[in-house]
Image 1 (cartoon, rainbow, N blue to C red):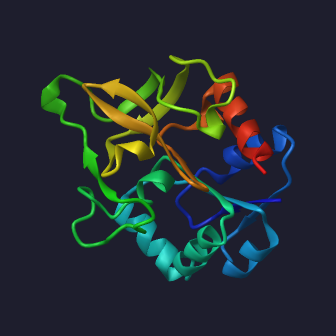
Image 2: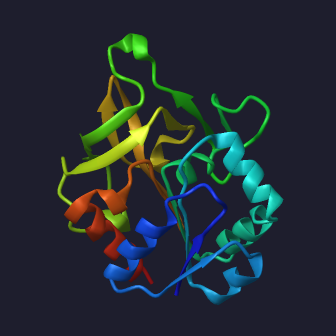
Length: 202
């Protein structure tokens, strides 16, 4: 069973349908008690960093998320759900992130000649042997919609990157924590393959 955290900030329906299409049983929940019923968790997210953290705090979900990860269970963050893994963001001056990974979240610089936000397809540059990337070719295209990007302090946490004016972390991975800046549920065959890999992680 895969839990999908509903804290009012994610495109829950499309993520749920994509996972179920890949053979998973899912549970959409905003209750910390339900985390005990699932083997994996997904944290989707669309919107603002500070709003997302405050919504998680309001539902008392942050301690439950950290406990789930400490129990070495598999956890996936998507888009904003990945960004709030980090300690801080330029988008949120007062609210801190979850601190699951060291580093921050920065905004793309429109003066570098790119349009902000990045909306559309970009090519993944694969760095290593991340389980989510099994049988995913280098330079595969995935779909993005974001103005901010994660900047991990430990570059070994970057599983794949893209170039959009600069090289940025498109995917992070550390132990049982996975994060993708792009939307696998909107990335056609490549994204569905990644979700299948996620479903099949033991």
